[in-house]
Length: 527
Image (tube, helix red, strand yellow):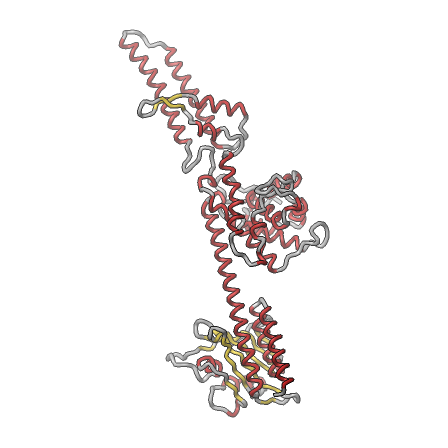
């Protein structure tokens, strides 16, 4: 071997190693390994096998140039041959097969002429030759051993050719070169598989967190699992925009995965929010709905009114007087007032309507009624805390609870910023933590305005609202029809809540359509 040829081969192996290390798709990587080995060895054919945990070898890629055979990998043609077992039915090593022999003995097998050897069972090869008219002569079978000493596959090359196209044996120099390539390839494949497995683990953990948050409360069930779907549909539509304000928006593979992670984890901070706050369906709800306590007190007031009436009757009768009819009238009037006040308090507790100042004052007045507990102690009908919650003007959350709910975004940001994401995913926290910001700067937690918000967060904001409006699995409300949901989003767009350009894309391209058919009830599909 001349110094020049050695240098050329070193350069070739270096270039191959670089190419293998940058390939991100496992199927393409395996295909590239086989095609590179064929080119280096000048062979007509070749097969790349992978080793499974079940002690089998499976063909991943197969090529025979002169016959036009190309199977596996990215060809779209499945390999029709079954896996090869390491051991026979008796549990004995399958050493008659060249591939399994190379694996079991951790050795390269170089066969100069398959028709002049009885070391291995090559009956299948000869039958293939008989059917196709091909002539399988020289074989080079090389185990692919990684840096951990594990054989993860086998490279098998067929029919080396000289410059004149004549079939020749694989020489020692070619064998060493292919062995070096096989070693490089094994490490590249192992690394690629490790990366893929780690990604699968990361995805599983992300989905587990989202599932746990969804299961934590029936009031947000499925939300964390559906928002990513909508987010990616809208993001993909934005990348396809060829004109207008979104024409320059683009995402590569990493950008897309980064946004998907953010969408799955956009509400992960809710894991820190108390369940009774997340699930607060009424104003008096804590770990239970305190309206039941209030109703019990009203019942005590009714009993006290009855006792007062009966006591007056008994005193009159004992004194030999007729009971005053006004007492019964007063008693019935008290019962009517208590019924009206209880109904008013129960309605106020629901939080379904905006509460006026007049209604708030009435709650306070009702709360001043007095009743007696089991120890005979006089108490107000409503505590200060109950009045404070019952007079919430809108919804069921008081300011402190609203802050707790809003704080889930801060918790989301803190949790995600604490995770050591690779540099290509460094903006996960920014995207996930920005989906409650508003175009007019009135959102939270940072009060970002317009272009201060990354487009990815604006995409997620629309997905988050649309899912919440149309969700059909909330116990406290039915999912809105498409026309209603889109009408609300239109209003939010006009009021500076969501990005108008993205909303226009959402409606113009009917981005919602696929999601709607998959996740909404038929009666919601009114468009």
